[in-house]
Length: 368
Image 1 (cartoon, rainbow, N blue to C red):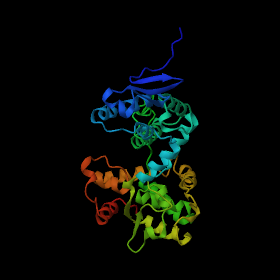
Image 2: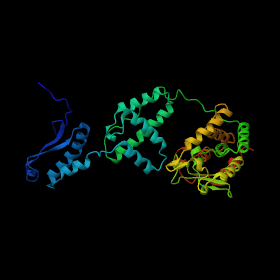
Image 3: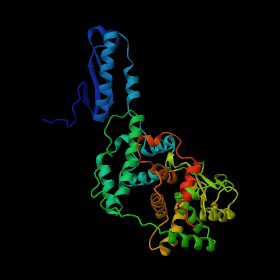
């Protein structure tokens, strides 16, 4: 005897590969519905179970009240929309107003493993395979976690928006050896910074001018490369790190105003000589945005050779250490670097430190 291999779902009938709603109508409602309600739901047991769970209570309420229910229209409305991951990812980035780069990198890894599928079709195995592939390439576990978390966030958004009831297959993914491969980033000494700044200003190299600006502001390289002329105020001695139509910021907390002190001011004045009247570093502008990676690669080539393997990103770590050394408040340090604050719920309230307070602390650590 042949037994069909399918999930048994109450109030459904399984035929020809599809689950069909199958409900007997009580006599008092047969004038509206007939003796039996039967209609196709889905070939996916999870979808069929979800639709049944939603429909049966509604129909029973209709039988009792005598109010006719357009259950076929409800089924169509409840069915998961066939939308691909890439569509929801772009929507998520737009709604959250965040830098798309991290999510694009994660999506590229996901698509290489499982393709750009409908959001409801990703499985736990896709997550495991992605982790395995990244491990095999020698990617750091912290980076793997960022990629997985990115996908998890997009899927959470998709499931909420599309009213999909299912467990996120990218949540609580175990990454073997997570954290064991962490290496503490090196930092610059004050003498190294001073020597590097002097060499930079003497070289007249546009890309090297980024070195003192990054070093004395603690900014990310993309934040400086994407500056417009209107973001720089030499009279007030400040730069405004803010999003615009050609460049987003990493997080909402990344928007800030910082003083240009000492070598940063000198380097910025020199950089403005190469401006095209719109952007401070026009050589890194493209119609679809700024190529900060190009600037990073060029700058790091010099920094690594000159300072024993340190990188431009080491400047941010150095700034954090410099601020710690003068016992600057943690909230202020986070504000200067545009870091997400770890100081607790209270740090999210209020306007933060004003420019004069920021300048007063940064004056204490500037290289002279």
